Length: 141
Ligand code: TYD
Image 1 (cartoon, rainbow, N blue to C red):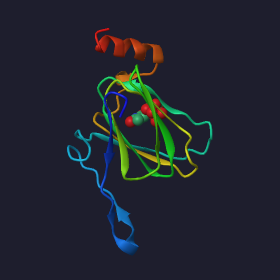
Image 2 (cartoon, helix red, strand yellow; image 1 turned 120 degrees about the horizontal axis):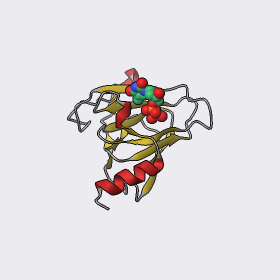
Image 3 (spheres, protein in one colour; image 1 turned 135 degrees about the vertical axis):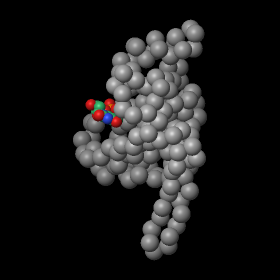
């Protein structure tokens, strides 16, 4: 991927014939950290919904679209990338210092997120200028 600290994760899709499919994610296996929190986002009926708009200082995350589709925008302060997530097996790892937004949700869209840390508002950078300063400092610029 073009953006620092991000990568794609492909889960196996185990086909159970007429009984559907299963994909499995375990900490320190498919998910590259110990999972300390799981959350999901749903009821995204408003076409102008725009989520994320922040970066983390310590928390790492992997995001999946387990139903429907949406567009994920990643920004490491120097480069940006847009990815359409529309498959339950495809996840995106987002490390620290990645400004991310989620938009263009299909009506039936459900996002599933695995996080390395418990929720802590202090870990968020919610202002884009603060984010630019933060990544500049981390890079020693
Ligand atoms: P936020 O992380 O900004 O959501 P998103 O990145 O999907 O746009 O969180 C939205 C609200 O939910 C905010 O008030 C904090 C709260 N929240 C928790 O209480 N615990 C959590 O684990 C998360 C992810 C959010």
